[in-house]
Length: 326
Image 1 (cartoon, one colour):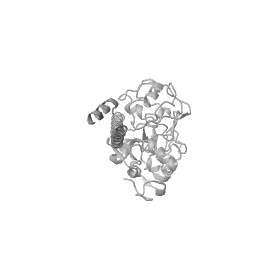
Image 2 (tube, rainbow, N blue to C red; image 1 turned 30 degrees about the horizontal axis):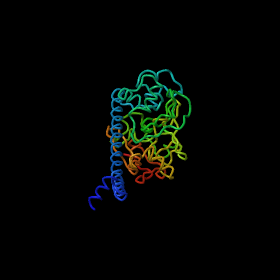
Image 3 (cartoon, rainbow, N blue to C red; image 1 turned 90 degrees about the vertical axis):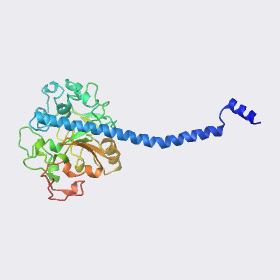
Image 4 (tube, one colour; image 1 turned 135 degrees about the vertical axis):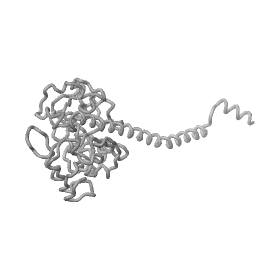
């Protein structure tokens, strides 16, 4: 009898119950392994992102050593674009800025292999490996006219990293076609009178953020991101941001706002990409990951000696009116 059963099994294979048991075991193993694989993937993405940001800090240091410690941006490397037009200087090699806030070309154009041609370089910036691997979002539309990639913008991945506007701008309006800190920003935090777009004036370099996860222009209600093509920008364009400390008062293009559920979804996709944290590089060259509380500390985004004027407008609960920023 047993011999007959063995012959029957050899002839017909596994029984239905046995197959169900095997399938259940496989499903259980997948359920156990998938979270671990997902966590490993997130860890790897975070590490690559931090390495990129460290590179941006190295690029800043090299730029400063060759340019008397100035910081790239609208009042230095991109100054010639502040009249809103092009002078063909954008084709003068891989390090020539394409917009006045373009810090990527001046600091990293050679090291990441950007094109000498301006339009191709624009495409390179938004397609090459200098990006956060957790960022897979593309631009939804274009606003304004200017140098744009040969094939348009809707197939481009959004810029992964933004520099902090406050360190690229100057405080008071002295003319000469310069770009200035927005009045509403200075209503919240007043920047020292002697501050200029220089690395040696930021103060405590180990606590001042140079670049970080986050992209503009975001429509906070819809979650769509617009590529801004104008050569002259006032609030960062595709390259700069006011930062998370001002996350609830920035009126346009804000990837750090956390008020509504839509805001939180936007932030998870565009800035707080690493399991609720974001990565940043600092003026002293190091890079680190910050949770939301740390990322919202105002000291990271204003020069030392700045004074808090409207603490209620900030996301940093540790500050109060009249406090000087270290």
